[in-house]
Image (cartoon, rainbow, N blue to C red; front, top):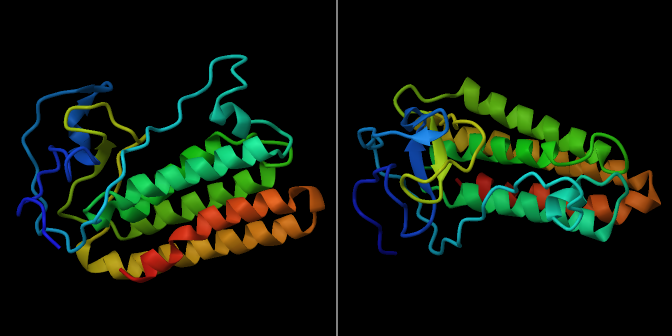
Length: 229
């Protein structure tokens, strides 16, 4: 496989049009400001062979806009559209995280993306338990990143291109390079636990079963990848 440029500058677009990482200090009040380029201490060992177009984070729907996927996910009654919206948002978030070539950011990226998914699900109704399970997984993943935070790699935000507005709601905390493999194993276990809990939760309700099975499959879809790191 042909590698990209030998030194990864997180202020430039990674792999031509994919995800760029911008140091958190580069944004003040939501606006990009001039900042010196940051070079990681060592080039990452993994580059995705194909990086899809970066999906934007779902925007909050306008009042009465029931046609948007986010609005569908926020409904209280389980439906094909609502479940599809949740699954799509989970998959899109994981795709964004996997497109980041600096693997030290992956665990907290998964945490932040799942947190956004949970926030877009109604707090009560048929999806309430799914929201709570996804929220719990997000919190546990964030704790793993914080407990193993790197002392040399800065926190960063994801952006579709250099200078673009950040995708994620908060800066991501990278884990120490020597902790990448161990934290990936822990993250895989957290996702597996969430997947299992979703499936058990669905078993008690025939109405929710098919919906929760799809959500569970999306949540657990990156276990094998994480365990291979």
